[in-house]
Structures are given as C-alpha cells and as structure tokens.
Length: 349
Length: 279
Ligand SMILES: Cc1cc2nc3c(=O)[nH]c(=O)nc-3n(C[C@H](O)[C@H](O)[C@H](O)COP(=O)(O)OP(=O)(O)OC[C@H]3O[C@@H](n4cnc5c(N)ncnc54)[C@H](O)[C@@H]3O)c2cc1C
Ligand code: SF4
Ligand code: SF4
Ligand code: FES
Image (cartoon, rainbow over all chains, first blue to last red; front, side):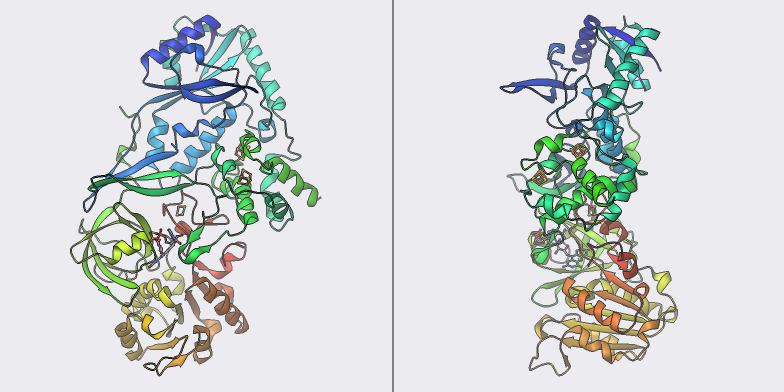
C-alpha cells in the first residue's frame, strides 16, 4: 500500500474534506486548563481543532467501539425481543499506536468463541487514522511494552516529520480515503521515509517514563510465582475501590447488563454499561456473598487479567499497552503496573 | 450501509421466547416452571448446563436447567431473591420468558459412564443435579450404583418430595435425606448433609462424587472426602458466580483465569488446584 507525503497546508484540506464528506468524525482536541493543555477525543468540526501533537488523551478511543452505555436489545414488555445493532460509520483521527494495540486486542476478544455482533459491527464501520506519538506523556511506558509503534491495525498512519506528514495506508479503505481526500499528495521520498523511521525509532525507546525491568513476555511467569506476594496487600491498603484504573484503561472491557423501561411501561431496552473489577460489588451474588471481598483480591485480579489471564486468550500478548492512564488516574498512586511487576521481579530474584 | 458480513451472525444477546406450560410453587421460596421454546425446537442442553432467563424490563438471571435432556421441554426451579427471580415467581401458565443458551459445559457424561455415582446436594443444589439424576435414570444401564444424598436446612424447605420418594422407591437407587434441625413431622436423619456420608455403603474411592450446594457445604464435603481417600479427580463440584453475559465477555463470572459461564459451572475438583479463587 502507498506511502504519501502531505504538506501541512495540504493536511488541513485533507481533514476538512473528511469532516465535510463523512458523518461521524472524531479527533483529538485540546481542553485548555490552568496546568496546560489536556487532550480528549471528541466530535471534530474544524481541521484547526485537531491536535496531533498531543501526548495522551484523558480517556482512550475505546468509547467509540464499546460505548460507556450501549443498547443490546429492545423489547415490548410481555412481547418479543429485537436486536439493536448500531450500523453508523465513523472515522477516528489521531489514535496512538498503544491505543491501536488495545483495539486490536478487543477485536480478537469480541470475535473469538462467541462472536459479539454489537462490537464487531461498530468496529468494521470505523475507519482509523492513527498517528505516531509526537510527545511523550508523563506516565507513558509503551516502549517497555513494545507498543510504542505499530505496523498494522490502522487504515492510515500519519507521522509528523517536521514540515509535513507521511501517511501510510495499510488497508483498501485507507488507500481509497487517501486518494479521495488528499488528491494532491505525492509519494513519500526516501528521505521522507527515513525521517518517518527516525520518529518511530525514537519512540520505540523514548516513550518510557516507567521502565519495566524485564520483557513483557516475562510477565506471565512473574505472576505465576507472585500470587501470594506481599505486594498485593501493600499496594491495595490505600485503594479506594473507585474503579478509575478500569475506567481509563484502553484494554478493560468488562461490562454490566441493565434494563430500562420507557415511561409508557410498554417497551424498553437492555443495555450494557462499562463495569470495573476493582469496584466492590463486581463479584457479588445472592445472599451478599462476594467472591472477591477483599480489596487486595480485586487489586490483584486486575493485574492478573492484564498480565496472565487475558494473554492466554491473545496468544501471549500482554493486555497492558503502557498508556500510563491508570497511573495518572489513581489518587493514592498505586495503580502503576510497572511498579508491581518490578517489585515482583525483585522478590523472585 | 454496514460494511461487514456480520448480518448472518446471530446476536449472542438476543433472547428467544419460551412459553410457560406449567408452574408450581414448591415451597415458600422455590418456583417450578416447565417451558417450551416458541420455535418448537428442543433446548438442546446437556445435563448441568444453564440458561440466561430474561424478564423484559428487569433483566436476566442465570438459572440451571433442572430437567434431563431426555425429557420433553425443559424445567427450571427459581428461588425468589431479587428483581428477576421475583418476577419469575409471578408467572402463570401461558406467560412468556426470554431464554438465551444453553450455556456452560455441563457434566461430562462420557467420563461418568460405567461409574458408581454419588450425588451430594445441599438445598437448591438439588436443582441442577436433578438434570443428571433423571438422565441417569433414563439411561440406567450406562451407569453403576446410584446414591443420592439430600440435605435441607429445615423441614418446610424440602421440595420435589414426590420425586425424592419415587427415587427412594427405586431398587437401583439409594436415597438418603437429612434436615439440619429436628421437626415434629420428620422422622428421618437430622444433621448436616455430611452426616449421611458414613451411611453410604459403596466404595467411595471408586465412585464419581457429584457435589452441589451452598459455598460452605463444599468445605465440609471436601474435608470428608479427603478423609475417605477419595481422589480429587473423582469429585465434581458445581460452582456459582455472578454472571451477566453467559458467553465469556463481561468478566463477571471469572475465577482467576477461568470463565465459569464457559468452562463451568461444573468442575472436576482436581482441575481447580491452580484456581485459588474457586473454593
Ligand atoms: C450457573 C448458575 C446457575 C444458577 N441456577 C439457579 C437455579 O437453578 N435456581 C435459582 O433460583 N438460582 C440459580 N442461580 C442463582 C441466580 O442466578 C440468582 O439468584 C439470580 O441471578 C438473582 O437475580 P435477581 O435479579 O432475582 O436478583 P438481584 O435483584 O439482581 O439481586 C439479588 C441478589 O442477587 C445477586 N445477584 C445479582 N445478579 C446475580 C447473578 N447473575 N448471579 C448470582 N447472583 C446475582 C445480587 O448481588 C444480590 O445480592 C444460578 C446462578 C448461576 C451462576
Ligand atoms: S487502584 Fe487506584 S484507581 Fe484503581 S480502584 Fe484502587 S484507588 Fe481507584
Ligand atoms: S493497565 Fe494502565 S497503563 Fe496498562 S493499558 Fe491499562 S490504563 Fe494503560
Ligand atoms: S458471565 Fe460474562 S464472562 Fe461469564
């Protein structure tokens, strides 16, 4: 597939064309705060609002594929059930490589065994224009996780090489979009491609504010030995069970299922809504029996899901992509997976 | 236009309709239902599997299929503990319910063939076990001696008493029953279910032991089985967890790396060795 060069002015036209021709376009934008800019995905209405120089978004782009609340089925009370599947098309602009890895993992998890048509329909109707990271966030450790750069999982990948972007189309969909929306873009030269590689090489080692002292492939082995480690109780001692670490995580996908009835009491809908294994009642059953009553058991479960249980479903891939969002979201500062894995490494030395 | 080919894939969250053909309150808390899928198809379950029962406007609850696959239609027994289960208690014959499933792995029937079977049931633990008990009765030649132990907290909570009496009357089934606390109407054994274990007159080490009851019961039964030198490979437990999706996605039923909705709820006890969250 092609590798094009888009000048910065040509880029504005490219984005404007997409905004004008496609329905739901979401891109990274700034929210200016006292401490500086914070970034978030949101509906994009002007090319000028797009900020591909961002470091990390507050919440991951997951919400466009697995919405915080989504209707699964509708029904008439006392009658039949009907599937509710969203077939709207959307384009996400500015997805970072680590978030792409998380999306690829969800694609696998929602399609393996029992095929989830709700997630998969949204996914297939979503076009992803990714971008290489231009600035490291305060807590990113994607380099440690091998997720700082990617070679697939996107339709188009943009890399800022200074005066221009290099755009790589990886799918037919991406190729067509590039041809249509950036008709004047020429092929990238060897020098452009080298500049692109330089950005990626830098990220491969430079997005590493917390350094994992082993390879990601060593994590399942560490956890196999660390189940009774003191680290769980130590860390969880100050856990609020607030679930922020679940909420901000691009790889967390647990959900609750709830019913809502309309005011008429005649019809209603069943939704799924994000849930979190750190929340106190996540594993409750009738009779007030809680299978993970203790904070440390819930805290440990999250780290085991990331580093041991989910990898078994993903051919060994670790379900933490090193975005660092949980690190920033956790008030008592205990959620950092690297700190836990490194401590286990120390203990097993 | 949707760009995918998923239109031909079925929606795993879409319930099918079933109609209540019969209902009966078995005691203060247990409602029995006999159902038939509106499609006319059999449910197609294996003994030990469960369904997600759906009440529009309230939600879903995982409920074991209590009938044997050899029977017509299917049966559920539901205890009223919350919103969905209370609504199920209000159903009448002719009413509709949503059903997803069957889910879970059930009892591995092939592994049990030829073996002596000992069912140890506590309270509504009888409900899922009954699917296998009646399957065994309908395929009696495929299995060895059958012993059923049923323990109930108090006399008024006993249910399926006619069926228990029928099993008791069968020559090739040993039926032992106990209640936790003495009652004027009760002349049988008094004490928890483990007090019946010494009365079993077959070689426990050669039998398959099938256990289902409240979490506390497992602890005591498993201690007793250890004392009797029963190998963990020969013990099968039926575990409850919170479940939402029933299809390995929502994460609620997870016990360590296992999804109980898929690999359970029946487990060979030896397979739980590396699953500290199990019991
Ligand atoms: C595999 C399996 C088989 C089961 N078989 C039977 C059966 O044959 N008969 C029977 O009566 N019950 C059975 N149960 C238990 C039954 O699913 C719960 O009692 C039911 O889900 C409660 O739903 P509710 O809406 O009535 O209660 P709610 O109003 O939702 O809540 C009441 C209480 O139930 C707990 N609870 C909520 N959702 C669940 C859930 N999904 N699973 C367990 N507890 C929950 C809540 O924490 C609360 O304490 C089974 C459970 C499992 C996992
Ligand atoms: S680890 Fe931190 S973010 Fe997660 S639940 Fe505990 S306090 Fe909240
Ligand atoms: S566990 Fe934390 S660092 Fe890892 S992917 Fe989730 S939010 Fe990001
Ligand atoms: S019930 Fe949802 S994963 Fe098992």
